[in-house]
Image 1: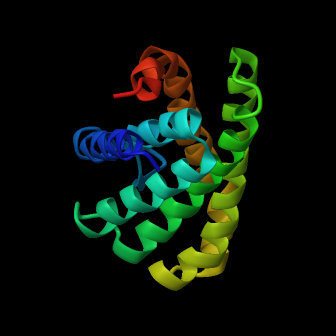
Image 2: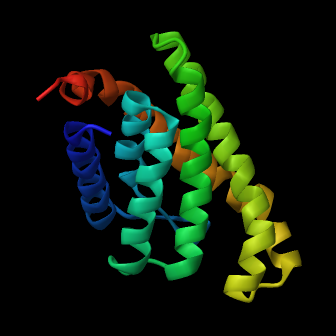
Length: 176
């Protein structure tokens, strides 16, 4: 990677970390689930530099959030990498072929759907082990809590990305 691209990715990682510290809104049906816009810089990076850059940034930001900013440590790291990483792979793969507004909408919508589906599976598989919750309790939360939360979180971040991306893409693509 070029040095300028690495510097821009580092800037986006820093913005993501600042956002997770500044904006945290508990989800009323389950206050342990918290909305934050920290994925927006990751989604923007994915659109600008492709799915691989999005996944790399996801892993870095997830690590910082989980182990340095007081996150949920291993559980938070794993869940964030899977949710945001799958969004980045999906949306980035779709958008990189045809960079139009229509394609951006399709890519973001697909990312939301895939991230939500992945989080249903991850909650069923991972949450009982890390949180000590019975699998039946997690299964009972899928439709009324897990699906709505992930649709709202990924959906809101996708909408913000849609409206912000073009405004800052010039900066991200500008050579030093």
